[in-house]
Length: 425
Image 1 (cartoon, one colour):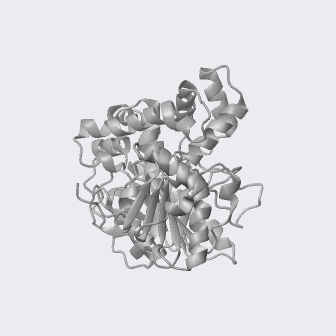
Image 2: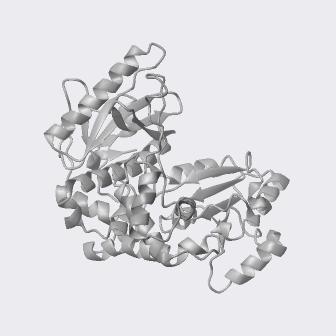
Image 3: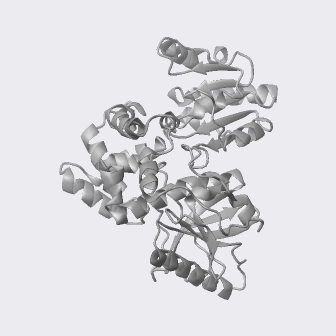
């Protein structure tokens, strides 16, 4: 299969040229190893079914042997033997060469692992990878560049998206898994379902060799999926799980959620806390988010038709899709994403920050004139609050990202209305 260029490819090459080693983190099946192999000149696969046991023994007794090979050398799923981190760190220190190693991992080692606690500062660069964005999978035409929007070079008016309401529901259910992109629609929908099956039956226990209950895992995932794109309290999540699975404690649920975070399934979004209201007014809870909305759909056992008939759920899943794509786009141009909520009901689904201090405010609205107007109203209210604070810079732009509105335009108030199917980095 021909390699599909990823947005993160440029970051991999750039950081490999400046650091001794890089680590690419992300969920299984998102394409980490495939992207790494575009630049690696040799590799060792810790999960190799024929040599994996031998590799593990070497990693514990003579790890330097696993580092031998043409550079850059890829060590795939390094976290299986966390001591490899130190071996790579030591070799980078010893040689002072750049671009020596690429480590890929689909799980974060346990914080209590003493071998992993040694810092990689100055030796490692960390790269986070997610499934395909709509632009990478060629579902977005990419006619509106987020970078151009920040630089005020984007002329958005009249640009059209080809994603229909029905197609959007399908894309949310399919997700951005590389294995699904070239499959027929029906077959592509099975990828996320299979992912959840493997996660519940195997990966949830393999991550730290502790037996965990597959049925409880499914219950937690289902409850979490119901709350995706919200800042609902963890207590309400626990109550929902317990209602369906009586013999479980809050502590056990917390343990399972922590493991799901280590497996990069759950990736919650930090709250923005600007100095525009009193500290007690701003809600600092993280927004619940999954690395790909298809995992939420699969956890709910839903189909494209199911979510089309449930507009509220469709809207929350659409916001999760927007968060996935925007986090990749803004990271590629040097930035990160947060969200804003306060106790007065004012919200902003996504605040994109660049490292140079610029930022933009974004609302995600599935569609419909009234919902778009509501999003515009929230953005203008938040901008007014910001302007009242003389110490804060104004946002570079206000944007409502829509699901099935097919034409981009700018309102009389200067708010950009942009279909997600037109965006790229």
